[in-house]
Length: 495
Image 1 (cartoon, one colour):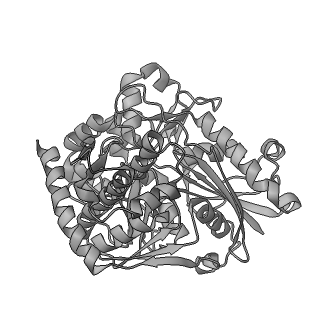
Image 2: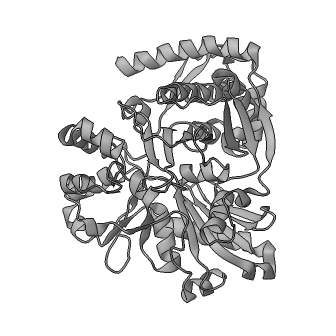
Image 3: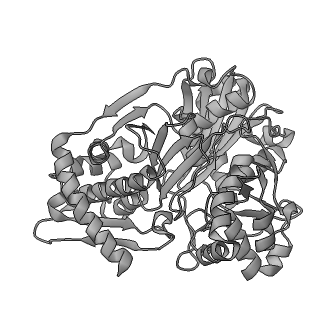
């Protein structure tokens, strides 16, 4: 059997087909080649049109299926990964009512903070394991307060991956993990939180029916089969947010295991079996993809909004004609420390690890007589690594203290410079694997449809492709630079 995986990101939609038996990716494609637009009608807002997601998915799928030829008919299941925390609202005819308010949109921060205080910090942290913050429930509350006419027309709300699944199967469903990432889940009671719905005035009927992440969640309709060139009736058998799915793709399923990614945003994601929370809600706990009532598995997530997006912004602004590989080569030519050039890379909305403060990005120590392109690119990678160390120190307070971090061979982890900096800064071994989000979603589909007899069997073909270990000399340089960076950060946080 062949397995189809879809990864709906905020930059692009990637599609992969995996041979179930060997675990090898046979074909992959992503669309668009440049990054998808994020519109900002007002400062701090971030929206995308779900119809654009669908169009890019169909184009990526077509490019992925083309080299397979007749083998496309052997695709037997579909898995979906998606950008977390977005809000999609549809009417009774399943038409999208407004652009999706996506994960990095900051408009609901004040609503979430007000809920945190009014509902009670103790209740929120013990039952929701999080502040309502800027998550999906708070975004929906913003729509209720500011677009009441539109709110009355909502039939169902969904996460971005739920929307794709609806288009494929004509079924409106979500996952238990998805409910937890939207801050609709009461961890103490193991059910949807009536308190959050009552406080925000959200009718329970607006929520999609939940299913397990690994399960048959609907079947490809005949009309979609004809439109997409896929076999009719194949199941959608897995869905998960991008970070739980990234962990799955790296076989991070058990307590103590840690995954990381550095795409548009940067994430450290650790698995635990202990129900715990950060008293300051700087990190967030959700149901992991393999959580069950009998065997609890929770994902502890630290998100840094401003990571790879800084690198892509630099490419657009200063790197005309350069590839990311060429940018990495220029960064490698510069000595560690970038001759005193430093970024604060937080220019992508409110940062949870700073308790939802929106600091903006800034560049420090620029000298027109010294610094060139390579200095800027290296300083960006160094400062992104500093952000990861800052976040990892927060996670250590909740007992997650890894010696090894797993990552896919993609995005910023393609840079040897970045891997060396991060490994030396955090005193961890970074292990790279031949996987990505779309491949992970395909493996998840194989688990969910029962093709694999166990989770372990699904990871045949997962291979280590590289390792970065801490360098003692680099550690000394970067420990010093990190403390300087930390002083800059604290000055900006408390000015």
